[in-house]
Image (cartoon, rainbow, N blue to C red; front, side, top):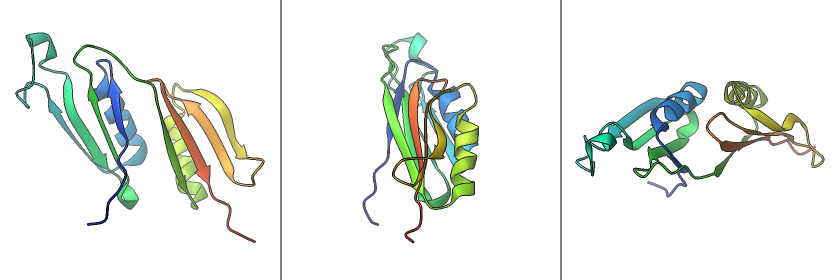
Length: 134
């Protein structure tokens, strides 16, 4: 198997909600394990926190995430790029639910279609549709 990069997001207690949202946007199969299921809970209030989750979407894209047991959330950015405008616009539209648009999804100065938003979980997403060379 070839090596691949897998973004891993950390949340302050809402990893389940966030990963279900992202899974709905990208598709694929979502798996979740709680701290209790992984025998990692330090106290009963950590039992239902997500210790590890991941989904593998179309084109073998993988996203992983968990809750921080101390309730911390870390800012992160995730970039998604490709050549299929319809597919990437679909991701943009789904991720835009409750988001703050930082750069509208439109033709960028470098010629690609690009947009950037901060979703309702505080994660920054950059979607870039590569323009085919003329």
